[in-house]
Amino acid sequence: MQLADDFKAKIVVDNERMAKVKLMDLRPELFTTNPDESLFHIKSIKDLNGFDINACNRECPTIFVILTGWNDKYNRNLPFYFKVPYSSHSNYRELERFVKAVNPKKLIFNVSDRANTKRRHDF
Image (cartoon, rainbow, N blue to C red; front, top):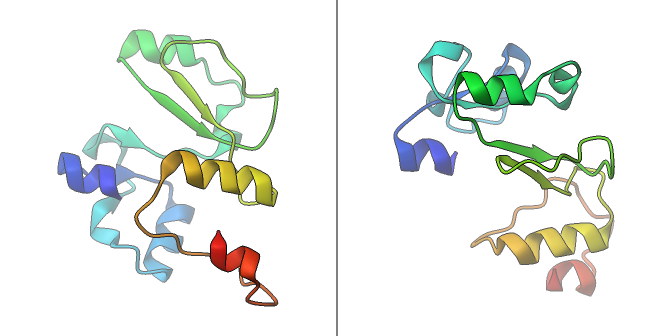
C-alpha cells in the first residue's frame, strides 16, 4: 500500500485477493483487478509455476520480490530477483529477523496469541 501511495499508482491483484482487501477494508481504492492499470502486480506463488522470469524481464524491465519461507524452490541468482525469506508460517526467529531487517514504524499481529507474553510484547 505504501508503494501505491508513493507512486500514485494502483496495485494489481486477482479477484480473490481483491475480495480479501475489501473484507479487511485495506483501502480498496489502491487496488485493481485490471492488469493494464498499473505496473505493480501481486501474484500468488502458485502463479510462478511455468513462469519464465527472464522472458518477462526482456519484455519489460521487471523487479521480482518473492515472499516465501521455502528454502530452495524459489532461489534464483538474478540481479532483478529478491527473495524475502518470510511467510505466514515462519517460526519466531525468522519473523524476528524479518522485522529487524524491515524495521517498521508499526507492527500489527494478524494471528492472536493465547497469552500476552513478555516475549511477544518485546517483539
